[in-house]
Length: 313
Length: 277
Image (cartoon, rainbow over all chains, first blue to last red; front, top):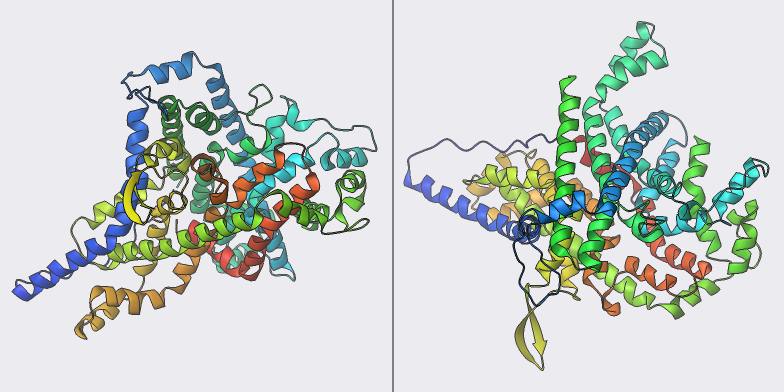
């Protein structure tokens, strides 16, 4: 995530009077006191769980067990990559999902943003419509699409009508060939409006004078997009790509509601698998190791994306 | 653009329309544009069916309670932290801010499982036979659905940024008048920061209402579960799709209404989270 450090007000210049020292002392106490509630909660429910994820991943801890966790070194990691076909499949599915969703969702979001960034009647209504799936819960969306994807569901009947009965569709979610693709489509549909808004905000930071100058130089709409719009959107692009990638790698709810990882593990993802191992099968040490692998992957990808998009500046 | 609008709306229109039809008619209408029109045997029967099948009122109450407390307490706690980080000079605040920004990269999914293990061991106060005792384990409580989500690194970050744009001279003037720091926070900074509070409220409202993974893992008692987890009750035996559509409509409608009323604020919150981020 691109973060500009907030401008923290500069400290008042040092003055060696006693009065100042006591004021400063009070300011420190006030600062610590007002930071304390959030600080304590963040330590309890963010920092400690992170440390716990790290330490548990080197143990054989179970969720409910009479035996205390035992240190097992790198066993969990070795097992994940060498002896667990479902994990490897889950990693592959997750990356495949991200590989399609990231460019398509970012591209469609930008297209919609350009479409609704015009001064014309009714454009606000379109913005609202494109944003409606975003405010609809992903649980609801997943259930709805599960019904649409049924063999006798709406998607197949639409395909049937459009192709005049030449192709009558299939059982999308129960076919290992199509299940992940079906989930990709609904995932893009659900979140693209969110990224449209981010792109739109980026578009609106580009000064109108630049477009006027480009027009005077005789640039057409495409030329304007390439020479003015796209360079102006660079910071937005970094943000959009990083947020979509992290969200895509965390794919969970759609899987849990629609396919439970099936058919034959074709839709199992890293997070879904970690939850299944850690929660349903109680192997919390192993699940923590998977979570850690996931976190390292997220970190590496976020850093690579920042580096790649920064160098072009 | 209208083609896109149809693509974005058709599943939801289908949901609302189907919630009014009996199962047999839903399946029959699927082959024609009738699927999107409230025609035929229209009634609210599915909605009554939902109330018979699950404790909807209880689920809605739980979700509203969890959402209101998470958002409300979050606004107070995170804005105080933002105030401390942006307007008070104390040693270590840059380090604290750097740590908070660094934690933005941690996806909740990676700590969800260790967190279950962790909250299962936390001490909690219980009243047993009129006596206050302490016990261990936060599973199956309201607090486990609320407390871990009050402090939010991104909210703190947004508040810190917003507060640092307010002129520092206001604090100095108030201090000369003898105001303490908490008074300055409450009487000067909070009233001037409406947009920041609205942004954080909206950005934390949606995830709180939509919570699914976490309550699924830590709340087994039916009377404490939120609406999203309530979905599971519809797929246990034979699935009555009309009732499913009624239930999903019921839990989506409040959010859609809030969104349509405040759509300008929603859109600008999301935009603020991206541009300043």
